Length: 461
Ligand SMILES: *Cc1c(COP(=O)(O)O)cnc(C)c1O
Image 1 (tube, protein in one colour):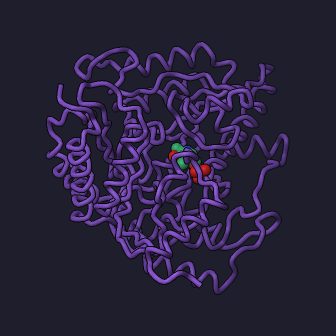
Image 2 (cartoon, helix red, strand yellow):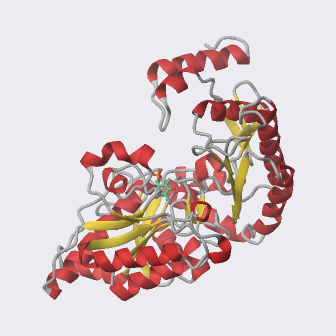
């Protein structure tokens, strides 16, 4: 069937991919010229392509993988559940895996999130939170004789998914601006990005002016707001923006004081990525809604959940009585079973406690970048490490071609990365060994040094 050599097989598959497929978030003209890896298998933090090359999965397969590929316990859970049933509808029926997982999530989540609504991707988990927040506010405001609000509050450079509701709350111009005519815009505050402080302050003069800006906006728009929707601690897709300490707690306090529900989009940050099980824990915040997805199944299967307070359930129970929302694969049993085992392993393997040592290996390897004029804003949160690239003369690196070249160089060294604009990052699966974490960071640093020698960042002025 296949041509003989692995190289021919690769070429054949890429050619057929190009003629029939459309990949997400791909510039089509650039993609048509690219030679993408054709992944054949995985083991731990390594991927192997059909040519037999091994690559480190430095993005955890875009932030979903937690325990590594081909984890024996997850593989076993999956095949054991397949031996029972793969799927049956959750409309009008239930199953043990969904019940146990909901109990578990509710117990692990910040206090008060007692109800779980399943879906199958992060966008819908957030969309469900947005709809439920609207129903909750509608119920409350009608009884108070006040106007029913219809606008969300979100942050510039925020990302909450690709459905139209979540696009309306999105703040990444490159992704979201073009769909403006189709969606309801949010009230937006500047991202609390210390590298580009919205108040023009320095770390030494920081008074969390960004939080005051958000508070003022909330105060001004409180009558119109359905909810505040944010990615706690880390705006991932927006460029791995790590919030200054205290911002989340200030925002949560303002929400509580003004009686505006808070939706925490923990789709990227959930399940240990930021060093704690959920990012909200780090500032003692209990949101009113929490959306999780991505790593919920350890990166095995599409499953997401929206956790809400009992008062939300009670409000909707009273009026309108039914939440008209559901998906064909709501609470898929294979995914629920794998998610339960993922949570078991996360605990049993003590992966959260091991994060600091692994992070230190990355930090050490990146010391080789100290003083490099084309690197700035090194930042770390949990097992996430990020840096921004610029030109040697300090100007912005906006041309996508050097980034494509860097990606190719990294791949030749055995490292699969996915830059976000001029931000490069490592998000290894939590199961990465300290040695592998160090290797990822070293290979990335080597890639940048080599790119610099080739003049990708311009010449020394
Ligand atoms: C990835 C992501 C989403 C969307 O999840 P999908 O499963 O890709 O639909 C939503 N919010 C955040 C913060 C994300 O990182």
